[in-house]
Image 1: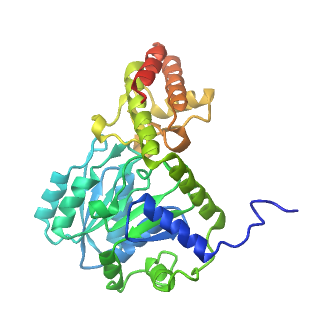
Image 2: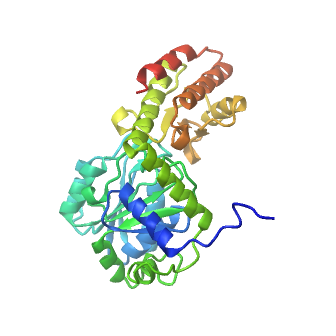
Length: 367
């Protein structure tokens, strides 16, 4: 029996290359773009294992759990790692990056997460890029949670390795990702004898067998459904306009923050300053004496489809996440999320949250 998702013709090299060009256009980059056949941890680890090695020194900026993971990979590669930890309720600054580089002039690799959906903060990459470029280090950026929700401009910002994926603001699947690679990053990879080769983690294999070979034959069979879904995401963004998509995410973040403050009941923004808050997700601090995981469970009992989650790991008892990205960057979804949280607060604390005030704040803030 024929099935539209199963009986598909093979994805041609020409179509694969065309999707790469659309990703490059999304990032406004002239760098090589490699679409990697897996979730974003694949290119993120591939970049680190090719770019770091014994004898190198890396500055690893930690503004959330992914920064901690990257530090572990860097150490596993034999690099000396300088961790710059920033409280999760704020963002790192270019000045702090500059101070770290000045104290450690041997640093030749900088790893940073643009927006941390897990903690709700976002970092000023444009300003940081200037500092890193002046120092001469290779700049590795995780833009998985920011692409589509806020500007991501690797060329303008001096980012050598910019990893994105489709599953958040782009509104697509988690099984496909991409990375833009600068010329000097390729040179760094090629000079590293420990860089992955003949491996699923190998970006150099893609360069030699795909890019340098003229993009005429794919190195292996691509993840076809995920590639077609990525193509559909790009088509949708191009049709609506990237600026429109980013504006919708900015409105969702501003409205969620304003609505949570109006809701009362002790629920407060986890990220102190609005300028440091990521447009892809808003994190909230649960009221004293209220377990965040229990609060989320009570809110989801009314509507399991809402984009609510408790914080991960040690943050599970104190943090609530409203993941307003992709199709959930929507005023009705924001209002429904705050309504459910308000009802759950009332149920758990016995004090009425002001849901009508929250809804008015959402309406007044949404642009």
